[in-house]
Amino acid sequence: AEARETYARRRPKSRARHEEAAEVMPGGNTRTVLFHGPFPFTVMQGEGCRVTDADGLAYVNMAGEYTAGLFGASHPAIRAAVIRALDGGLNLTAHNAFEARFARLVCDRFPSIDQVRFTNSGTEANLLALACATIATGRRTILGFEGGYHGSLFGFPRGAPPAVNVPHRAVVAPYNDLDAARAVARENASDLAAIILEPMLGGGGCIPAEQSFLEGLRALADETGAVLIFDEVMTSRLAPGGLQEATGVTPDLTTLGKYVGGGMSFGAFGGRADLMAMFDPRRADAVPHAGTFNNNTLTMSAGIAALGEIYTPAEAVAHNARGDALRAALNAIAARCDVPVQVTGRGSMMAFHVTPQAPRNAAEAAATNQPLKELLFLDLLERGFYVARRGMVALSLAVGEAERAAFTEAVGEVLALRAPLL
Ligand code: PLP
Image (tube, rainbow, N blue to C red; front, side):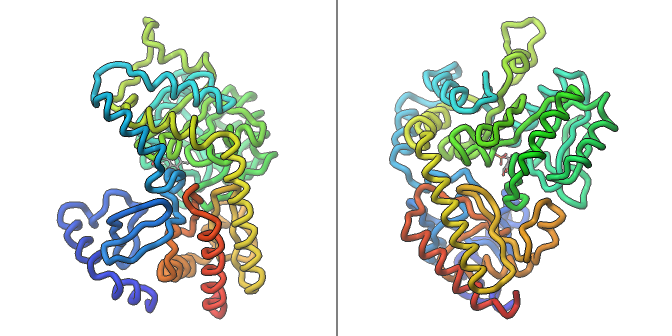
């Protein structure tokens, strides 16, 4: 309560903006994830890794737009790419010079993607990948995993019915539990269209899939005739060719989003050419997939800069090594403070858990101390570091060595301060 009071006292202008916004948007909100008590702050300006709020308070943005903000707030190459697209005119009502170049970069990069189609969000990409799987197999059941998030219309929240607002039937198993997945898949084998998962739970707490789990699901998909879909909307940044390359487990379809569009609205789904062929409009029985902004030139041009110029394979390797070093430093600090805090994840994505043991699945992550996580979030804000409220860090390229060191120090300070509660 005290931390919330301090937060509110220092942010009268953000409070006023929130109250005004609440008159025209439910809860003043249009992205649920950004809401937190007592009211969220409003950012007026971003530059590099820094954002400044309505009350003039500056933060190093460690939340990195939940992985979409890989390039920071003002990368010159992204800016140049967007201006190039603007100079060519908007809303061309036609194929444009950018989209096939961007598609080539995507296909060359991710092992499972022979062919790709663009959407406007990761949510849409997943819905289309599922549509593709159900049409290809003539079945309608999909198997997902607790704690998996595949977009605002589709997720597997723990302890609640799966949210799938499309005419599929969803069944669910715990993450990293191959026996349970096998049992559910075999029980539903004759109607199983797809097995979908994030190869590391992202929003669910940066919990990596065990190698045997991924390999087992590949075999299970082959055994049941289901389409294996990797949602790499977040994880594709963790290695040059995504986690599918890093683990050597190749799905049939992959969905992408977030940073791949250079920070513009973006999503994509792609995979085996024989599956993607259903969308070929030259075919008499083609499955339609429309979308006014699917090939919008701002995203296409920014995406070419993102993959082609900035986040090259070498840069992906270097950046994830920086993330591994940061996570190791944070875990070392927690150990030194002798507090039950674990920082899980891989490469440039990580999450704090207030628990003595790193969680392996959503149930274990949910059992960790959530109110203390909120306290760490507020304490870090007061020290000028913005992590996602749920304790997630998505390291951007704009966060330099000095900021990473200062962040580690701030985390150490907060853990020492709160050690009596932890
Ligand atoms: N899939 C995963 C793994 C995600 O983390 C997200 C967003 O956080 C999505 C899908 C949905 O993407 P979007 O927010 O672009 O719809």
